[in-house]
Image 1 (cartoon, rainbow, N blue to C red):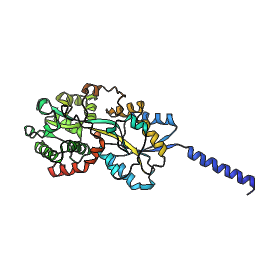
Image 2: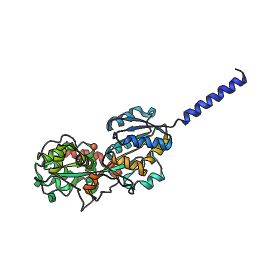
Image 3: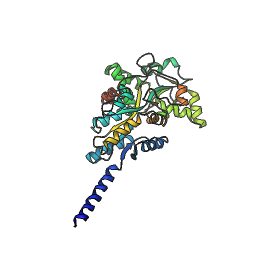
Image 4: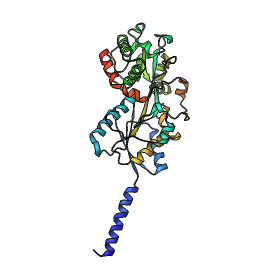
Length: 338
Ligand SMILES: [Fe+2]
């Protein structure tokens, strides 16, 4: 090769490498799939020039996939729902610690850990049939174990992360013994064997098959905002309680995410997490699923959430929910809450 040609080849090679390094991408594994997410991601690309490759999947499948891909995983960020699941990802060692002044300032301490962050919150509320149950009977999670409610309580499975996270909070507050007798009380109040999702419980309460149930707030909000006549009828029959307002506050759970240990694009990953805590992204993120932003100064205009009114939040650190997750399952199993 002539010296000139060699120089040209070398120059071309440099350009190619340069172009590759400059093609900024973020590989996002997400268990979220809401309409507002399109705008959420498009705005990030507009602001940063970083293109998002999104892989959507069910929560547990995504965890399994990242685990199987191991060090070869292209995933930079995992977004999913429920503190128990985020805790599982942490325990599997899937996340990398993120140090960010911005995230520390924007997200309250109880809603983050060293390696994953909450970006929206949802509450686990009590829903009761107004004709079957009196409001004063169901003001606290503890009340649901009261023998006066025998044959009236409905729930989804005790193995579901939403119930495991609630149980974890009960263990953290009241200790294992009280938590177990609560679980036994719930089981002896069952109107039926646990089945279905939260919306099924709300519908069963409206139909009178159950007197009272627990459900995530966004399922309630979704029914409240529905135009379907059948959903309107459901909401006419039921009332919603913010539990434990005179004690520790209502249990909340979160949507959140973190940067993955083998993320090939770590700088982009941190930028994306920081973007999710921005005012604009917070609004999209919360609104997509009738949730609340984690950044206190950000307000959403959601007619259903506004109608439900303000409430006292249980500010137990999300890390504690994680700590008692395994114990919660053992207690539910022992109590027969399957
Ligand atoms: Fe859900």
